[in-house]
Length: 87
Ligand SMILES: [Zn+2]
Image (cartoon, rainbow, N blue to C red; front, side):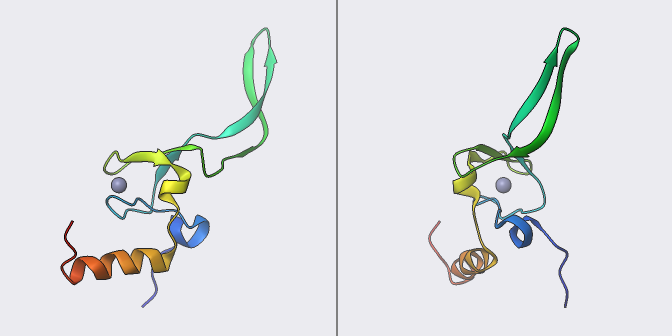
């Protein structure tokens, strides 16, 4: 059984609240080329563990560090739920 690629596979990111890992909003740092006409993003962008992050599904927010979740973390979490973890 093959599963579609999600954020956990690619970035080790997933929502710790609802488990969703298809779409997150992350505050990025980037350069901008600023002229009298306005500003245009320039070059690459980046984020780190302290960048703001929000789940588009349930609205849970925090930092990228809070959302860092490997595939095995997610499996452990769902195992805990199956075995009646008190949450
Ligand atoms: Zn969520």
